[in-house]
Image (cartoon, rainbow, N blue to C red; front, top):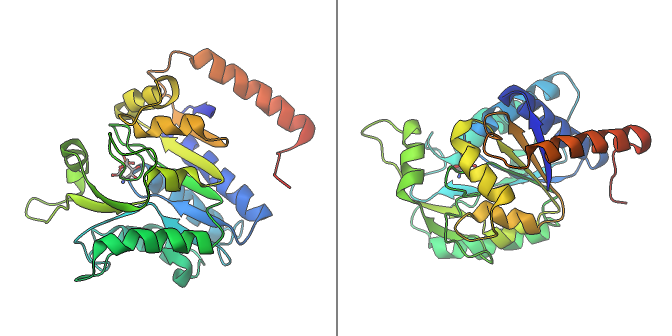
Length: 268
Ligand code: GLP
């Protein structure tokens, strides 16, 4: 894992956007794996600004989101589809027909959604860059603790903690779903590159378990220890629980000097 600790949440978003921009520069028709949640809001904001400045175009890109609530219609403002349209898709030049979420339409069998979504990702050539956040309990997508590390896109029941964490987005009388369809852990692990963003002190515990803890289904994000190309961007608060902090900063300096000498490495 490449662990980069930055001074603020704003720097995390700026560097995240930089990495997305770099990918789109070398591969304009990139397949992006996208995430929702409050951490990603400033990343999308940054990307929108870069698009408005003419620095980046998503015209040829395709996207697959990690997850979607079950029982919330796509046109409901609480759906992740609505979040993505509002925060990103409607504000850049991406072709919305090329943006996908694991949606289960009203009355359709949700069990069929997962395999179909997996097929669609494969047909698109797989995900080039998967963007992730992390739950305070270590979840990625909606893969809650105890999720199979070999799981595929499917229905998950959210933990009480996740429901409580996300209750801030729902008004008192509003329906808050407890079920979601999420890419599985094996699906996420197939992405060619992974970029995880975490900010704020409430993520410090999950972040240190992910990076320095044992590989365990009880911290689904710890599976990323097995992925070849993971970049983790943290602000100071989210990095607060790391034991090995000095080493990560030292490594970053070495990597920067390698990049100064040889440039950014891209697979041929
Ligand atoms: C949500 C999403 C995740 C997200 C995580 C953290 O419930 N399903 O994809 O990474 O929880 O969200 P936030 O960034 O709001 O803390």
